[in-house]
Image (tube, rainbow, N blue to C red):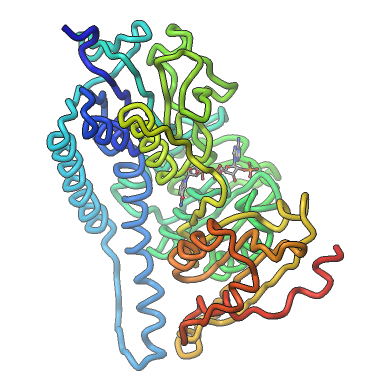
Length: 455
Ligand code: NDP
């Protein structure tokens, strides 16, 4: 008789939990996954996937405008927000079924309901108790909205994806990934968009040339960015609109107020404290390189650990967990040179160090190129691509690549391989470009920013 009902119970069937569960079951483990909402988690149900579908929808606004320069007469165009949301929902339903099927095919039992640890080996779900040798926590994060008067009138990305109507005017608080991606979606589909950031910069932590270029391009599109600004209070008016008082005393009247001010780990109410699991001051499960918490049989992967909060990172944390503990193939994840993207319009792609990070420990040579994409010579759109390479002067190693412009995530994904291999600038230079593309600029930048090594 086995000592436990399962070898592994995963709490949370998001990206990290699903990957770990499926692979562990594939390696012969007896696995159950607990999920109280929809299988697929944040990325598939409330994040990357539905967001990207809306971004695709938003791009048509520019495409219709640009078409005239190529001889097209497009005529009057209009957009049906409800139709886009319905199409997106249909795709999410399909994906949910795919996830259910994947669980079934790989032999993972789905336990539907809210999972609570009643001791380090027992999870209570919907009135029943299940035991496991190992517990993996993959419950992700949830939007954080600061405690301001009128907080109850705000929406987050969760609700923004399902709005019944496109807001005529939306105020978005925050200047990170989510704020700017949704600013682009709403603006392109016809809303008036104001973005409010508490400091002087958007995308804090990104390379300064990325922040500057994105700011310029978003402002060119008519998105108003209010810097060094904070919301004092929000009141609902009789006409259904919201009155927002901001720092400098002025009032904004808007149809929606969306907060995109970061996300917190979802660790409350699942019995972690009671089981003795250590968490940091943000409530994230503290784990070691093996994804193990301070409680020997309890592990965590993904956003709940607040390391690098990106889907592919969670997937790979789930993978190395399964390899290590269910395939006798100990593996840890290398967190260097993880590429990421912001699906603004234009998009951002980035891998490796920012100039600011690189300058701390390296003497650097900086290569920057700004140019108009060939397409816009005919479309007439006033949009610039920015590409930047950061090179260690001593070793010639490329430390970082950054791009703002159409398809930059697609371009940067390839360069991420080069950085992972430790590519040098000489090797970039020895690479023959593909013509005519924007990407070829990454292998043809010859002149460093003058004196960039002497700053
Ligand atoms: P971010 O951490 O990216 O940005 C949060 C923003 O909110 C920052 O501008 C921050 O300002 C501001 N902020 C934080 N607290 C307050 C406050 N109390 N009042 C006013 N402003 C505040 O978080 P997001 O919510 O945009 O996204 C969460 C995470 O989700 C990201 O870190 C990312 O890991 C992931 N994500 C990834 C995506 C992708 O890969 N494309 C897309 C969407 C999300 P300041 O700069 O001053 O701190």
